[in-house]
Amino acid sequence: MAGTPRIRIDLNSPVPATRQIADGLRVELVEGRLKPGSDLPSVRRIAMELGVHFNTVAEAYRVLAAEGWLDLRHGRGATVVERVPPATATRTEVADYRQRLRELISQMRARGVSPAKIAAELRALAEGLNL
Amino acid sequence: MNVPITVMIPLVAHLFMSLAMFALPHVTRREILFGVVVPADFRSRREGRKAIREFRFAVGIPAIAGALAITLLGPRFIPVFLLAPMAMMLAAWITFVLQNRRLRAFAVQPQPVRELELSKQPERLPWFAWLGLAPLVFLVAAAVFLYANSDTISANRSAREVYGPLIIAAEMTLWLFGFALATWFGSRRSEPLRRPAVGVFVTFGWILALLMPGMAIQPLINLPAPVLVAPAMAIILFCVIYMIKKSRDARGPLDSTPNECWKGGILYYNPNDPVIFVGRRDGAGFTLNLANPWSWAVLGSPLVLMASAFLVFLLL
Image (cartoon, rainbow over all chains, first blue to last red; front, side, top):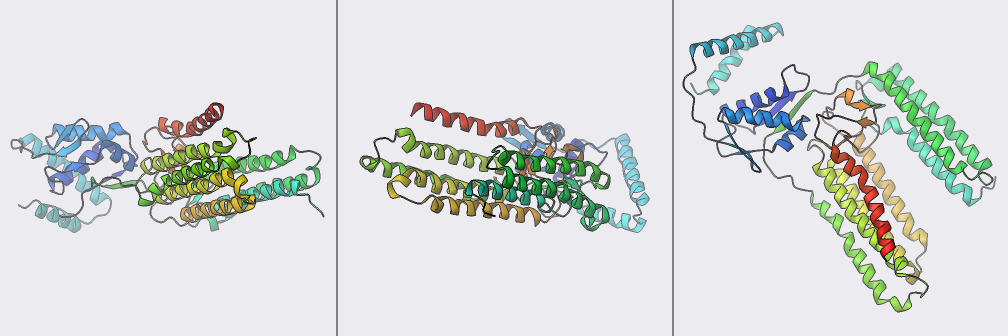
């Protein structure tokens, strides 16, 4: 899972840009490409490069800071911090994630991705989790 | 037919501008026609060929009529020198906007996916951008030369006449350097014309550095005017051709500015996009995002430059 961390957004997606940015950054954080202590680009730079409003990026940073991933300091931008893992997710939360996974898999199948391919993708992602 | 030089100069200028307008649909990337993002093969389709043909017709008629008017009426009706190119330009831009509206039916949305590498590497200016300040040295050298030779300068020439061009050139050099910085920091890193544009601004600064001191010391060394002006014009022409080539040959995905934010294919207005400079869709180079307040500061900067030049002339 090495490589330069990067995020991408789809301007035509129904998913709001704030969520796409926060989700993209979270993937990089969870998979370890963004390590504690590393500085993230400024809100201005991300907004300019992605062509979205400053507030959109600032909101995504705030979401991740609230989750404990980032330290936001005025004038210093955002820094990745060592995150204290939260308490184990409740049964309801796990059920909610399972439902979202099922929806995603259904979307993939509807777009013509074969079950074998989906299984292979899930396997590859699971291996990346160092189970 | 013997055409006097007073008619020849505006005639050549008119023909040059007509030629530039005639070539307008061809200075952008293949995927952009009259400011609309179209499929890459659209230009060779019937609708594409028709749009280009109509535009050429709309430019060609006033271009020929204007050339005839300048030649026949010029010496007796001076305003035709200005009216003829203005009419041609107006016809060109009206036709451009009309074709833009028509071609929107064939528009494709530019690549909607944007990607960003999350490195926090500082944004370094290209090394050659700093050469944009070097012309100041030439200007100071010219001023020192004039001061050292002040006894040979005609007593009829005021300080304004002697040092004025140098002071204005210094202002313009700083303005061009500022413009180069604004272009660099106000556009996206993925913009392929960013580097060439900085290079062109630096080159313009150097042209000033040669032209204005040359004008200032010209009475002392009797330098013929064409020796000063001809190289400057040649370099400007080279810069224009260079930018057009860079614009046409740009590779990679198009800057995904939404189609609906382009007014007539000429003006860009997107309040959600914090960028100041975006690649033009109606020609080579950059245009401004008019929804960004800094763009208006950029637009207003030549006025500040002119006002300060006027002030300098008042004070000298």
